[in-house]
Length: 51
Image (tube, rainbow, N blue to C red):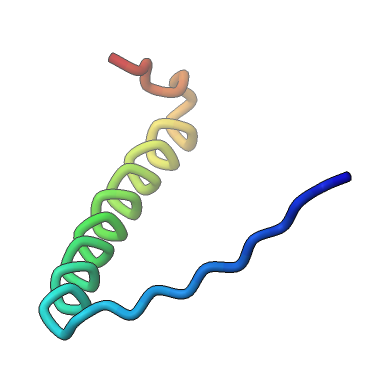
């Protein structure tokens, strides 16, 4: 039998602001990393290694 739980969070205005700021930064880093990997792929190089 599988159990399923549903959660709701109600962040304060400060928490909403900080989470929006955090995810905005994460999106920028992801997009920059993706563009870098695509550029490497187009030039025929291997994917960058994880450190």
